[in-house]
Each structure stands twice: as C-alpha cells, then as structure tokens.
Length: 403
Ligand code: ADP
Image (cartoon, rainbow, N blue to C red; front, top):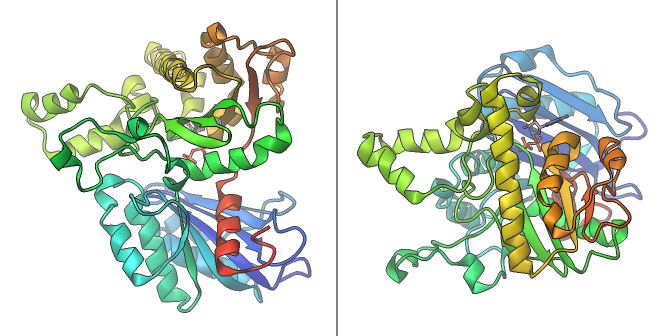
C-alpha cells in the first residue's frame, strides 16, 4: 500500500453475467468522491481480460492469470487476491453492490441481511441476465469477508413513486397481484445525473428533462423537478429502446409467435430476447456500437438507423409525458462517446426545438446544444459506482464515502 492509499476503504461491485466492474473508495477523507482504483474483468466465460486504473487514471498492472478465468466466481476470487496484493494494508469496511431489481419494497438502498437476500432471490426471473450475478457477488463476499457489512443499491429505486399510470401493466388485476408492474431500471445512473445536474445545468435541473442512458443496456428517463416520472424500461429490462442484445419495445404477439408459431421453448425465447436481438440481432455482426459504426454492411447501417429511430420515437413519447422538454442529457458508453449517434438522435428530435452545436458535440463538450436552442442538450458521464459508494457510506455511517 503506498502512502496515498487510505486505510479504510469501501469496495463497490457491479457483477454481471460476463463482466465484473469494481471501484474502491476511501471511506474517510477529503477526496472520497474519487475512486482509489476502478476497473473491470470483461469477457468472463469467453475471453476474459482485466483492466484497472489508479486514481490518476494510470493503468495498474493486473495478473496474467485473469485470462484463464472461467466463471464469475473465479473472477471475484481473483479480484479479492489482486486487491490484497495491490493495496496490502487497506481494510475493506463495507461493500456496496449494484443490484438490478429491488422489487416493490425497496425505494432506497438497504444493508443486506439473510432475509433481504432471500427476498431478492425471488426477483431473479425478472432480471435473469443480472440479478443472479449481483446476488452471487453478495454471497461470495459474505464467504470471503464475513462480518463486513454489505449494501444493496437497486436500479429500480430511483423510479419508485412514479404516477400510477406510468407504473401500470394493463393486465387483469389478479395477474398483477404478485408485483406485475413497470419498475424502470438504470436508476443509479439517473440518480447520479440528477444529483450533478443542478451544478452543471442549474437553469434546467428543476425543469422537464430526459436522460438518455445509452450503453449496452439503454433506456430513457423523464424527470420533472429531478424526480423520475416515467422511463422506457418497465417490468423487466427488455422494454423501450433497442439495446446491444435486447430488442426493446416489442408487440407481445411476437413473443406468442415464437412460442406457438415457431415452437420455441421458454429457455430459447429468453435467450432470443436477452442475448440475440437488438443491435446484434439486426446487424448479425455485433452488439457493440463501435463495430457497427465502423462497418460498411447494410445490416450494420440498419441496426444504427433503428437504434436512432427508436430513441427519437421514445424521446417524443416522454416529451409528451412531460408536456414539453427543457433539456436532454446523454450518458453511458454510446451517449458519452458517440458524437454521431448523439447528433443523429438530436437531429431527429429537432422538432422539439433542439438544435445541436455540432462543434461542441464533436468535441464531447458538456453542453452540446447551440446557445439559441429552445431545448438544451448535455453530455454528462455517468458514475454509478460513486452513487453506490455514497449510499454505502451513508447507510454504514462511514464518514467520507457518504459525502
Ligand atoms: P454497460 O455498462 O452496460 O456494459 P457501457 O455504458 O459501457 O455499457 O456502454 C457500452 C456501449 O458503448 C457499447 O455498445 C459500446 O460500443 C459503446 N461505446 C463505447 N465507446 C464508444 C464509442 N467511442 N463510440 C460508439 N460507441 C461506443
């Protein structure tokens, strides 16, 4: 441990099916808003690779054995060993987790107990791509660091309290009893943006804002006075925008057709909906927007066209919910890094009074709309890990991480 490494740290984990993202924050100290280190292990189960950065953004050496990992459990063990070696002497005093689904009961993060864990496991079928892995990480930490408190931060919490019509799934009441309603996701990202917006864009922060979280998973959130009033994701993380491997909004009759017309099993339909559709399904090339932008193939162009079309269509829909629009914020992988996709979505939304500043957009500036634009546009990098660290620090009563 070098002299700049704090003694007590909060570890943040975002465990997915093929990736493990992590960040470590000082639990006390003036610079608790900056991670001591952050990184990820990607491609778990296929071609695993690990990368990690120090607070000053310099790359940290990672072990060669990361390339031989074969499951998410092994990735967690490797991460624990690497943290021990790299930050020997640092003491993990709390672990904060991204947990995708909090169900009906959790409108804020919670300290994990065995009873809460049991309850969260029941939600696994609603988020099969995420929830089992999020909870698996909690189990693994409990085994390795018994006694260290853990906090679950939910992607659904920020959306609780939406109007009844926004949460409704219009099926018979008896089917809705067990929690069949719209939840919304990416809440930690939206919460972070809502937290920083008053400083970055004070003139619009309390107005009508749409945040476009465009990553591998993608959704929109409509905010009024900083609170979520609707979102394009609903009961599961399949609705709304076209995503890397998920289709977004789909006529439910299509799902019936997969079952009845094509005779697919539930497992096969789940795989189609979560892993084979969206950008990957349309293009047949890749789920990665960078690959599609670099490709000359007509199917890659069609995938991008659909991504933009659907985003613009959903922006119009949420603008109707808000009764007009004051600002739009782009965030996450595509939203932060692709000037082309931002430009195309903004051009398709020009009818709302949105006029882009092309140079600012190309330069990835924070404000990317022209000074005369009726609706302002912003690019703000999200920071879900910091949000989780803050919640964890607050709930565990740690000074610094909660700042
Ligand atoms: P997640 O956290 O859900 O894995 P990210 O927010 O990291 O997703 O976003 C991943 C997406 O961002 C991928 O589709 C990737 O292609 C896209 N992306 C990252 N950098 C760029 C870029 N420079 N141009 C276009 N797309 C990018």
